[in-house]
Amino acid sequence: MAVISIRFTDQRHHERLKVAAQRRGMAVSPLAEQLIEEGLRMQDHPRIVFREGPAGRRATVIGGPEVADVIGAIVGGDVADGERRSRAAELLALSPADVDAAMAYYADFTEEIDGELRSRQEEADALEARWRRAQALLGS
Image (cartoon, rainbow, N blue to C red; front, side):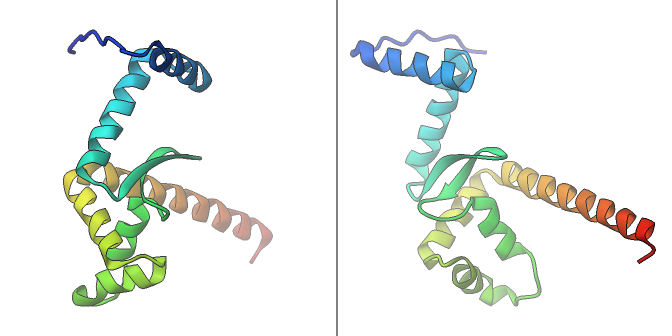
């Protein structure tokens, strides 16, 4: 762990950070760390932003879906390798440049996105298993 001291040239920045941390039920330091990390990622990947959702903060294509959605559309299915990029763009109403941006982000943060995809699959599997058990109880 590294400890740094930040001096704000405008006290309002510090106040806004404290209010945001309180709103999220976080301490100031973890929120500052999260925002710095996200800012650095967005600087490296200009078409990617972070949005809050039911599953927490996720990397998303500006004005579009989560990066994991784009990657899921590219790596899954039975579309030929050479057509996956254009097919994902078509299915998700994205430009090829947006698909490329998601792929570039995925290249840098593969484990994170793979973890999101794994988590989604596990949840889907659990829901399907519960549905199958309910159907069995109904005699279907």
